[in-house]
Amino acid sequence: MPEWTVRAACAADAEALAPLVSAAYLGQWITTPEQLVARMDAAGPNHFVLVAEAEGAVQAGVLASGFPTAPAAVRLQWCGVPSASTPLYLAALSWVATSAPDVRQLISVVREDHADQVAFLTAAGFRNAHQSWGAHLALPDLDLTRYDALEERLYLAGYETERLAWPAPAADLASLYRLWEQGVQDAPRNPTTTPDPLSPETFRSQLQQEVVFLVRWKGQPVASTRLTPTGDSVDTEHTVVDRAHRGRGLATVVKAASLGWARAEGYTRASTGGSVANLPMLRVNQRLGYRPEPMWLTWVRPLDMTEQG
Figure 1 (cartoon, helix red, strand yellow):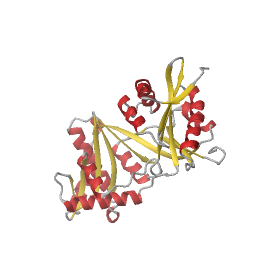
Figure 2 (cartoon, rainbow, N blue to C red):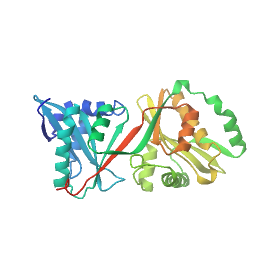
Figure 3 (cartoon, rainbow, N blue to C red):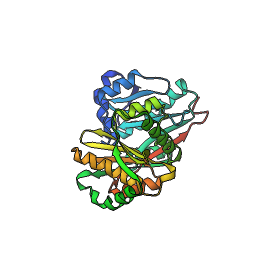
Figure 4 (cartoon, helix red, strand yellow):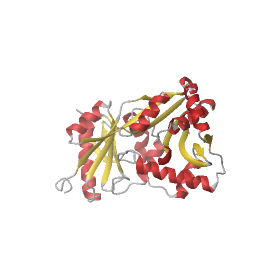
């Protein structure tokens, strides 16, 4: 068993720590040394990075950050050699007790097949409180002809699908913002999948960085989905249908149109995700051919007064 030295991370640790963080997310999200340095520079009471060093090398770490949907919580994400998890945990508890005494809960998000971290969190008294799903679709395998009949029925009923063009009319942006607000209110979510609050201005700024498809009825947007291209893949998210138009297949049609665009543009892979309680969207993605991955588990542990000092 190595003899661990735990300390606050510094910029010089970023090169060694970045691949450990990426590996902890099983390669699904890649963290660069530059991103870690920026995170260290932004350190605060509940926002810090600790590393565990042995034999002169950084071999593990824990990254702490606030959790927007749980203000009295700190999120801890471990990486690296499993035997360093306990000393890193004790050091993180000490940091929180000293610097963030108002914190009442610890949170960690781990994929269910990351056996080492699941075992550690279980032993440390964390509880698996929420589950989220992720899924992937190979775009070359997408069969859009399956949705021709549905699209024709909807067209005859007055529904038309299109890509949002820029500059977008102010009325469309206002309608899309209202749709987004409905989706936030209605979609089953957990702390991990709840989006941050957005002003209309911030929402508009986000849309300009994305590819947006929508369905109109009598000229008004009544459904939308948003794509974020990354490399050769697209992340598809925030699919929402107006309450008065649900149950007719609009989510399937608008997502199919957006994925068809992505394939035509040369993207080869699509990803999506959300809470396991969002059964309607799970069914939509299953129809489209998404293949689910192991679940992401949100673990929580309350802090009592003795742990807070």
